[in-house]
Length: 436
Image (cartoon, rainbow, N blue to C red; front, side):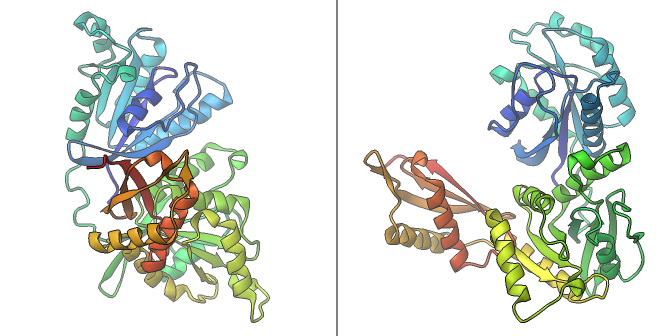
């Protein structure tokens, strides 16, 4: 079940990105005092009052602008609104109400979603500073100063009240998103997995225009497969329908339990494939790389090894990948896919006992000491796996600044060498702990 989604929308330069960064607790969005800096949607997970959620920052909305960039920003914001559970409508308390605010308010009312009106840049609150905002017809305005972290808690207190309660409790199926660039064979694969012609399959790239969920069972195991549109490079996105398809494909990745990354083996791994796979990696999703159209490849004894070597070179950032060489057209090895999906999801949910984890990492520190900087060396006090899916490890150390990227990779490789986390990313974080 995906986290509830909060979308922050509003016209440009009202402080959406600053609010987003404060909620997330780190600088994710670029904040700059000029319109149009945040052009793409940015997702991040957060927690408030014991409830996990995903928050999305959108570009500023200019409904009446004819500029191409503003039209693209509006389309992205519209998809964020469509998929959101709660919408935060951000306005600028210093500048006051504008015609654009009224336009956005009208659009949000039509969404029929819970909308919280947030008046930002109110450093010293008084009722008269927000009185005019009642005219937007969106209820009581929340006065905040995102820059100074004032009033954000009140907004989140109200937002979490609108999260769906137990909406998908009965849906315990494994959700599988099928992603990749156009014409890689995703729809053919879905049809083969489902055993009937659900998607239209043609040789024209981009036939599947939307993300469509289909539930099915194999024995006593339940699955939901999400067939997404092919994800093109931005310069290839020429029409509104295609643009919506890309946005919904990314949203499908966000709510999936596992992703099937379909690659056309006859073309090999392309730059666009790497970008799509990188997005799945960044979202922390377990995944399986499917080298499709394997029936078209001329093979010898070493063909698979050569392909694997090339994959490892191109996917150095996620060398934990699991791969299956298939032909959706002939059905070759398609019967293995669901088992591999179950396998990588089980890896993502695996938890290392705390004692075993500390023994492993302490031994790693003894076998290969971290490099010293200015006469100081990283020292490990304690380690804990704080969450799963993806597995997340926190190391308590003497100085977090002493952890070099290369040593972090060494520690990750140490963990993976002892425990099978193939197919899933893992996260490592360090925190300072004072010596007793």
